[in-house]
Image (cartoon, rainbow, N blue to C red; front, side, top):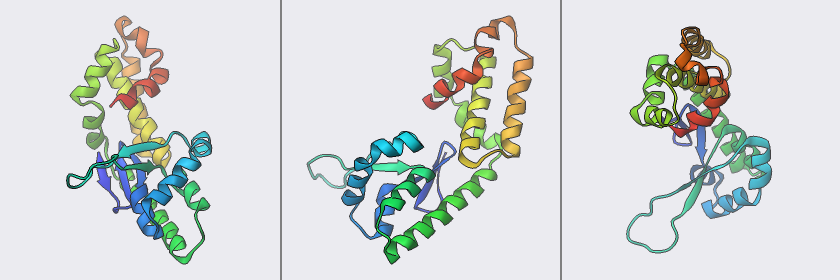
Length: 198
């Protein structure tokens, strides 16, 4: 799922992300300056707030040269970098706008239902990857439910949807067969390893 809320923040795989190019516009600075700061403090930001996600932009026209890069920042990463920016009136406006955008993204995530999420986690490509790892169909469902629960809980905290997904996982766990046992007992551990494959 990829949903804009609004253009400053995008929801991808149930995680709100801010585009560094849009942040730079709101700050009133060139993106290359903001991106330079992202790289300068990358190590300490990743130590505290997780790995940064970098993307390569599609260049318009037939211009040569290196493809421009940008970053998709989580809420915590965004606020950390904004704390390093100058405290100008435009920067303060940008910070308030981002707070509102991330809040709106969290509200939108809270309206999602399991039926909207399951196709994302149980699509053919994802299932094929898990099958190649040796998981049985039941364990694939278990890992998928727990992956959804982890993503949503990390993005917006515990809520009725995360409880529903955990209950679904427990129902599958209660119905495990000996064939499922190898992966079923460790599905909580293997979830974090496999659900990022989607």
